[in-house]
Image (cartoon, rainbow, N blue to C red; front, side, top):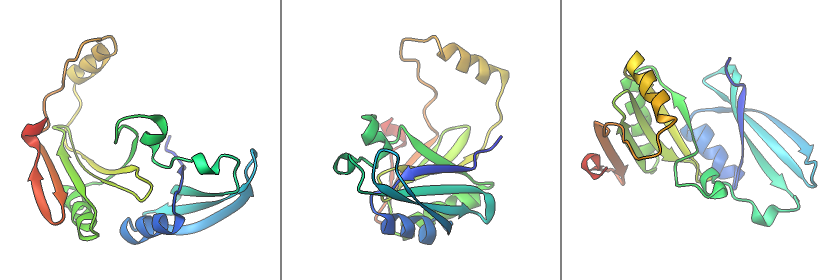
Amino acid sequence: MAYHHLALAAKDMKATHKFYEEIMGFELVKVEVAPIPEGGWGKHFFYRMNGDDSRFIAFWELHDTPTQSDHEFDLNAAANLPRGTNHYSFSVDTMEELIAWKDKWSAAGLDVLEIDHNWCHSVYTQDPNGNMVEFCLTTGAFTDADRERALAAMDETEFNPSPAPAKVMLWKDDAATDLTQAR
């Protein structure tokens, strides 16, 4: 079973639109304008991903809600969690496609974090709402030992780290910083 859409609130809908349509390449295809049960109203914007009419990311632009001045749009700040804990990830099929996203984000002036997790390879940036966005390529296969380790971790109460990433790079202002040893 796949999801139909992910819905998030937007701090600045025009900046969100620019990021998701112009940089991410998703297409705005629909808006629903509706009252909010607690008061106020909202515009719910739907962006089609990769031309697929069954997969969307959507954003709420809220108006006149009772708690409007207290809204937090960064998922992690709202939940008082470390940056990047809550994030969303899109898949790619090739390393070339993953590197193309890194290059596209860098060319748009965005900071990009690249991590080879040893079983998947990811690039991350932030959207205008402060949320971390990821593209990820699965590069390894899962073994019975991987499953056993995951099940054992459910009961662990002491720090038992996974192997360090093979590579961690920060791409900022057209310069790369190798953070691999910093972990």
